Structures are given as C-alpha cells and as structure tokens.
Image (cartoon, rainbow, N blue to C red; front, side, top):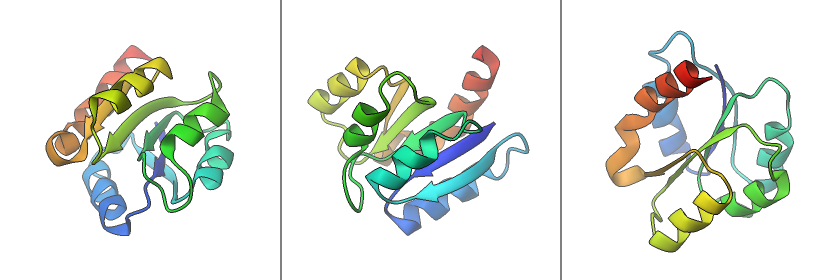
Length: 119
C-alpha cells in the first residue's frame, strides 16, 4: 500500500513514518508540506492512500480535496482542528476517515489494515 503523507509539521510527519514503518505492506512514497505539492503527488498513479492534514505550510487540505475532486486516493484526514464543521465538510468531500491527531493518532495502522482488507 503506497501512502502519500501531507503534513507540514516535520515532527508529526516523523511520528507518522515511525508508526507506519512497522507494517511491511506500507510504503510512504512521498511526504509533502503544501497544497500544490499534495495535489501533484496525489495524482501519481501509484498512490493508494493520502494522509492529509488540513492546515498546511501553504494552502489547506480542503484546497487539496477540492482540486482533486473524485479523482483522488482514499483519504484519511488527520488534524488538530477536528471541528464539527470540518468533519462535515470532509464528509461532503467523500473523505473515508477523519481523525483528531490528539486522540486518534494511534488508529492509523488499524485503519490502513481496514483499507487494505476492503480494497
């Protein structure tokens, strides 16, 4: 499973990489920090899942979702801004999972297993 990690915090990106490298079926193909790089990277044919922060160095995760539309990899939003209106907007964009970094961070491995199982 090829993962695109869209995260502007190097500390959090390193934590995600550490958490996911324990799974031999997970390959992080790119880590990007801004909206345009995320859009360009998500359009690669080898990306299966995008882990997407909402607040980026330049742009937003919602800007990424709007630009990609329905032509995007399965998406896990992972944010410190888990506001109800953001959850609803993510749902309207068809996001498969919406995680609050402060409480759901450790769910990432199980979610990736679930995504692999469900194709």
